Image 1: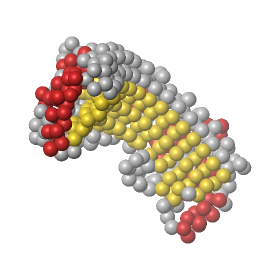
Image 2: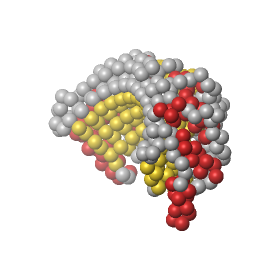
Image 3: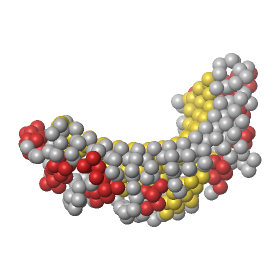
Image 4: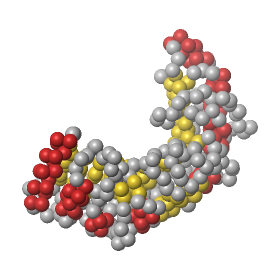
Length: 373
């Protein structure tokens, strides 16, 4: 065997046995000096954990650069990762998915690892993830998707080299707090649906360009304060934040309208984003559509509407009085608006009436095109 890219998997228990026999016999004979990628797809697997460990040991011995393991078994949740994986000098990409137990040894060190994705894995203890991250000196891309049935008192991500961070915390996950210190970060995604009261301490991210925030936090002050350098922001939050923050580089804002009081957050962000060019009011993926409960226009027109706003998108438009007032407010006050796109979910006759009503509204921009989708 000389192939540098290896991919194996099974669909049922009979295939599992054949796969075990094949790999036990042939993988030790592999002759390629470097294995570029080794992928194992073992769903509802009956493969012996010791055999899986040995396969990974052999792959690591061939200067392995990329490892992907998708694994599940029932009812046992064995440890299928060998200790030598955590000291593989050549490993650049590691992707683990399923109830894989992460037992990180004290001597762990992955000097070349740049991408780490952990989907629903199990952590042996509180120190497992922290120990792993602390020993990845060049890590650039990290994804952590926490397992619903697991728990962790504190999620800590302190990685100076990190540029991309994606964190997913499910609704009923037992967690007391989140601590993030990633000064080189450029992209940040946080989906935190945990309804339990917990803190979120995020230190400054001066190089951050884009943030995707979907949280159920009771307070977002620390979070907002850490992302003020972004150029693109997508946000869904019931909680508000106090004034004092300035998004002077923000060009593109997407605000999820699934929260009944989202218009409050909209007004705050408009005031704090003097250079905003594009605004999208829609629902994030898998979020329910809710009507805007009220629209209280700002006492003064936000600076971005006078100087920079060019594009407005309104999704799931029903033509309620609150929605109509909001749309009319932008048409009347956004001086440089070029395009306003209205995406409606009502029938054609109603749609025509709504379009006619908005089309007859006065506009601050003589070049603004009204598009009804």
